[in-house]
Amino acid sequence: MKDGIHPDYREVLFVDLSNGFKFVTRSCVPAKETAEHEGKSYPLFKLDTSSESHPFYTGTQKSVDNMGGRVERFRNKFGKSALAK
Image (cartoon, rainbow, N blue to C red; front, side, top):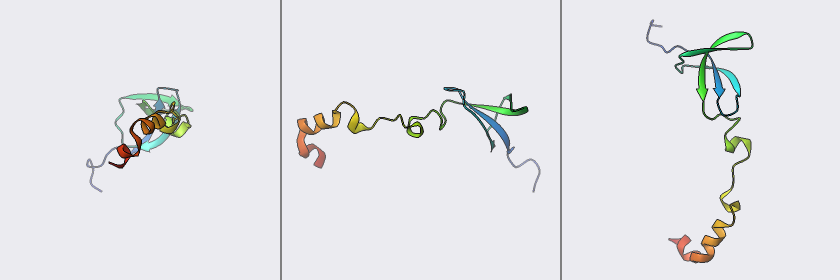
């Protein structure tokens, strides 16, 4: 392999800022900071959302049909003709 043409693929510590969840995985993501995790220093990448805080993965996502009857009110107001278009 040629030197200098490949990205720096290494272990990186990802931290979810919304709940403090941390995990280590291998990545090429650029990181300017480092942090300690389980006695080892890793490049640090901060996330806004991870699988621990995303509503789809946590089961807190609301269904459109369960949001106060909005879909039913729409269907009653406009009937099936609006849905058929």
